[in-house]
Image (tube, rainbow, N blue to C red):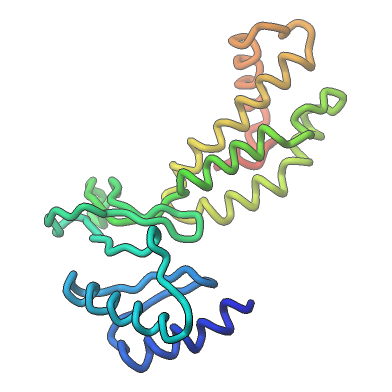
Length: 210
């Protein structure tokens, strides 16, 4: 909240006054400015350095960068063609255009950092180590978390999130191996068991319906 209040004057109002032709998004102390050329971006960066110095602030030396949004129709070479913002990585990816043909678009998908955090969360969750619970109870207890991830990270390029959430199924296979005696030490058989459950109850776990 303090960052928003301070930067409203240190950044937002300054941008609106001195660079009204540069659209931007800002969340707390992270911001993206949309420039039309590299020259405009470098000029803006210099101006921001001076403005923030007046406010006793500095641009982050690693996070502050000029990014070329490479996509179909934009073929220039540039050393940096991606950036992270709010848990998403924006970079060139294969997409289908309006005609249904594969093309290259500069689009967001869940970032590697966010994906790693989700996998770690699944490994840490004590509920997936509760062998006294039934599969239905596991589904109920993991549903709020999974739905939250799906609703946020699944808004763009959902296939990337699907890959991440496969770790949930891997955890369920390990759970089944310990839960059921006939699956002890039999990973392939446990995976087949889970596949069968999924075919019979495709909406049991929140991510299965994706």
